[in-house]
Length: 477
Image (tube, rainbow, N blue to C red; front, side):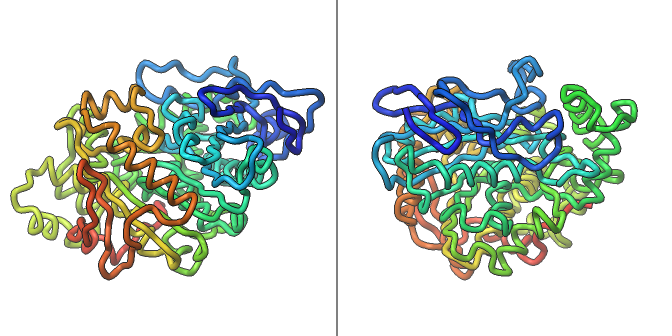
């Protein structure tokens, strides 16, 4: 049993790791607090049995075959989970995970996010739920934008106030995340209100999509039309989820004339550069010196878009048209000269990989004025998915039996070896600030390649960096 600020909690133990699940870090963000910034939880009497994950935030199914979210789960969704190898100790490095899900879905209770294996390396591992979709990122008049990011700040404040009771060092916190979670990590580095809440950051496949307030408001207008014009405050969460999903899957795709570059993603939500919660894009903010004292790992997977391409049936748009809309001027010529043997399909997958994740991640390291390290996952365990988006997640957590690992890595005998590489690097970085390879600078662009035989090379994606380096990623809209 452990005493924290709001009361006492009792967890469970498995294989020498103490686990605490479903601890509230904020009040229920519904009723009078719907669309509000998170508010600290009320203290409780007695002992909270922290043995079950809290409810998911409202969202559509994360993938085919998984059950849809239902309000029957409950709405008290802002909870944290802790894995610790030494709850009676002190001074362990702390690793706080932020899940991905295109800012529309995600939850901390997925089996692939089980923190026990990482905690076994001598770290306190924290995961938490934050609001997604309309509840977390939709533009709502009278409410702050970026409520999902505000939830992340509240969770990190909870860590500062309480993690010592679990054996962690609040002065040695590493925040890490993948995809939309990496986008949140990048945002936190740009947000003044997050200053001092973490010492290190790991951003795995940072998305380049950010919205202007006007674009976010336009998305809300489309969602509200589909609900019959009712105010979001008066609309049940499940109705907003369905309407937002319809906008994302029916209204936006394939319509760049109406929706711009986001028609190629397509997503309905992203962080809003509102000038308050998020003053500027991460690239601009970091270049201006934000988080210069935070040590950073930023990286990407070589074939990021491959998973989306395969699961979309292999369809692809006209390469020239996509280049004109998504990439800087002259991009098509540069790509074709750099990769003369590539087919149109290959170039399309490469372009979408660069636009969505690879170049935003690379440019985050380029912009950072503090210590940076960069990696690229080049290990391609199957010829279908290759080194695709999401492959790094089960490697990071050591979730080798998880469905995601089995789907993306198949029966590869090298799966344990690659997972060990990631976990060793991540936990070493969390403890010491050194992942085990040379620091990054923009001149040499030294990059660590995660593969069966890892290596350190200079600028492995030089043609793409040359195409994208002059433009950056401006907010959509």
